[in-house]
Length: 197
Length: 197
DNA sequence: AAACTACAATAACATTTGTTTACGTTTTGG
DNA sequence: CCAAAACGTAAACAAATGTTATTGTAGTTT
Image (cartoon, rainbow over all chains, first blue to last red; front, side, top):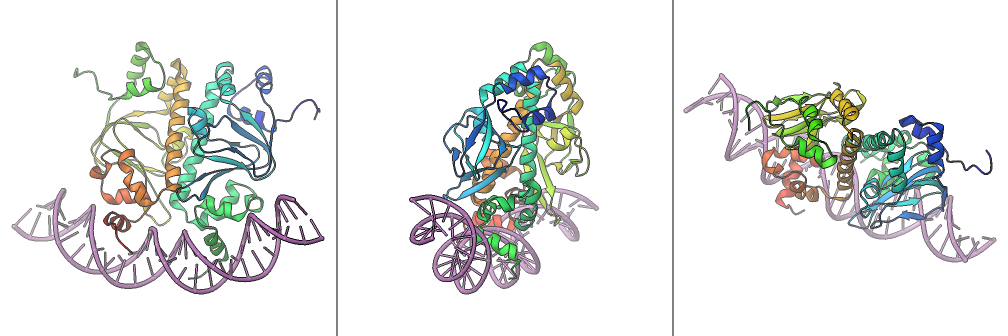
């Protein structure tokens, strides 16, 4: 890798997965990308702020969570390498975020701003289509998530976490897993043990 | 209302809410619309079938649900007048549906097929944008739904049902409400009573 | 009108999940 | 390297929620 050409990870592959984009268009996109480094535990979005980016994770791991009425953190999503993290509603509507986004490891992201997205829509031949397909994919993820919440027990969801988030169980503290499963850390510990009542 | 011009309810207003569309474009759309009547209790989509339409509810009420591992129905969504019902994932991907869609009242819908949607994308000036905005709105709904599931108690969610679905509590049997809240009918009855432990 | 069905409420009991506290280990920060 | 903080497990108990069974009412069907 040339030292002067930043490595934007799998972004191009990801775009190509959605739409056709030629070299000239890619150069236009690439000129807008920058890398941003985030230290472990750093919070890059807090509730009440407007989310100014879709963060494409090149390396590291982000956690999206919110805080409920009892001041408990509820982990909503983990963003691994080559996936996105954002408060999409805040980002798209320009309204205050409900979510927090925090790095659980030292992390490198490519931020995509709202302005950049508008340029994609306007200047890429299939820009609107890209936006539609991304929104649809985000929707599918939510759809699956809700189905899991309704149909699976906490233990079943725990056991399928490795499918949704490869290696997640070895990368993040267990209490974050518990909050993702919407159960207490103590209870998750019990479930893993296979306790009898 | 002219007897020969079907009433497609608020569809045009809904499209206009998302994009600009001129009279000529609207005539093209309208010529594709038909009305379909669904009898109370009729099921128009079952798990395993491919969902062939986005159903715009002109009058009546649809229920979207799925069946969990214990053969219990879990109500996922109610579609009131001037809103949609579909298994969006099945519809867009052409894969077998996870959901069932059932009429809880005698209902009139305008089905929008996948082929019609492609024509919209291709022939409406802002067709792709329409698709993107619809996907985004669907996403926002899911987003709010998940936030509710994580942060609110069943009773809180019960009390806000009238906001999400006006008059729903007087229109559908209570056990469907309970399944929407993901609690048992017996427990919902208890919560309403405000039982002390 | 009678029989049947769906529905809601209630009580009693069982199961799941949360809370608190304690303890030992690991990780982190200075 | 040391002290402090974070973390996971465990046990005991409390609270929330599910299950089953019963009853009464209202709506449907015959």
